[in-house]
Length: 179
Length: 179
Ligand SMILES: [Mg+2]
Ligand SMILES: [Mg+2]
Picture 1 (cartoon, each protein chain N blue to C red):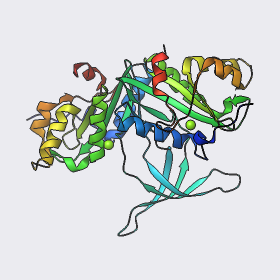
Picture 2: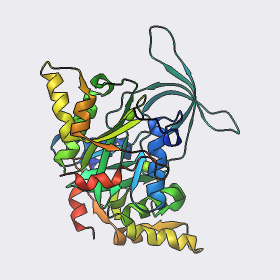
Picture 3: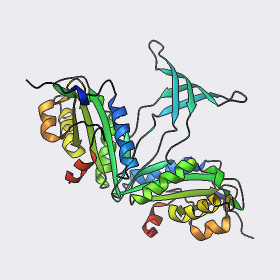
Picture 4: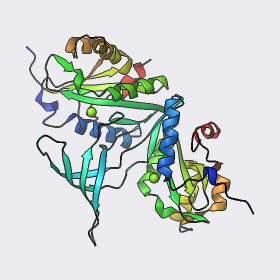
């Protein structure tokens, strides 16, 4: 039985934290310019107190029409969605919005690099999966099949990323293997 | 003296409205996948009323660390900032954040397409300016020079975009002329 290596475990960080650290590292070293998009909110009411910053007093979360991250690497457009699950044996597809799937399909049509990064949080395991491989599982669900992707299927369709210190989740070298 | 053509005037639309319409058109016709990024806000307090959507009750505007728009066209990464001014003779550089300039410089280093779209609202005139041409004016200001770019300079450094119906601001064909 494999002993868990706590030195590189995620220590309560969210996947978003880990990817922001990774992208900062890439930016500082000039490897790529990739940013997290802000959370989309619909702003309804703003107060303007004198002598201080405007305060948003009523706003609502909107469902995202695109993915979490995008940017440029080697002149190429890079676009991905990051998801984590506590599940130990499969990734539930209800975690993904249909318009995000639609968006990644459009990116692929325009020769961008589209993929997902999935963290199985309780297993401390990370995978990068090209969108075209992932789309097969989405279509299977749409055709009435299972509403999740098994860990075994993800192991086969994706590439495992071993977390490290710097950068935290080194996904960029894997993009050379796409297409 | 030229008569103003009201049939295609911007009729109270913001430049953002016009560019969103344009990008929708490009998306529908499969020309490019380019989206406006959400406005970045720092969320401090959220209420969760039972049986209805979460309400953000306290949040603040953050200054953007990147530009307004990005996406993919022909496999290439596209990134731009849109600005409008009521000024009739020059574009004030205080409209642009230093980190936005920094971001566009990084995009260029990674072989992305970086540019600005500037609207002179009271003149109903639109220009697209490649970032490398625009950066000259920014550096001039940093070196103690003027804090704006004259309309004449923009006419020379950029390409004028004539507004139309569909698409509203047809900037995509101009990208072929870059580099
Ligand atoms: Mg996500
Ligand atoms: Mg803007």
